Image (tube, rainbow, N blue to C red; front, side, top):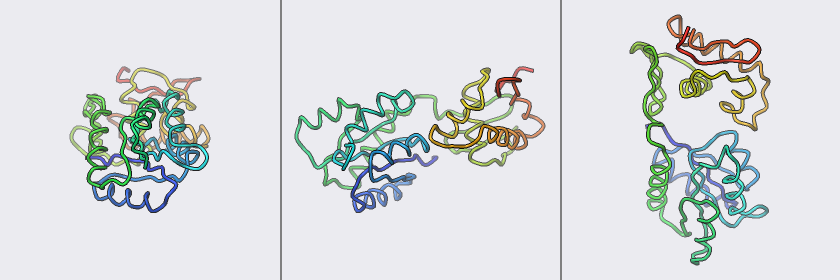
Length: 229
């Protein structure tokens, strides 16, 4: 399985470390933020699969961040588990009403946290998202993060992989360089639009003669993935 990425947001470093160790042992990739502002930027840039969010933090609280993420179209579907020392019923309801998918009260065991996290991720993964995609002998497997052409493995960098995955799941539509930057690099990353051209060139090279023509240049617009000539 490809490691799912979890962003831990808590102002206490010792708690972040304890959670990070438990998640890494369970084969999750871990990102950390100590406040809501850093967390929001990391969500946009790194697009984690799940957010573990502390309720009480200096400045913007976890509940305010949860509400903000659920309001924004790009992050509305991001699964959130609230972490809190508050066990009262009304706080749980408030957290769930803000859009949290689950709620775990400190102190908790690492095993309980990992079990809750797995359950939320299972519910959040739409059916079909992890199914392999095959077009004209080109196969992309989202679970193993592997790409092959007619059964032979292709070697490509992580950005090229993300570009290809986006294209293969959004076929027959032209995208501008700006749209590709937002979708593949994330909205908070400041890179020039010509960076897209560099990675398109690398992707075509990685695909080889048999499949590079699937990535089509659309004059005056940008690029399109199409199996049509």
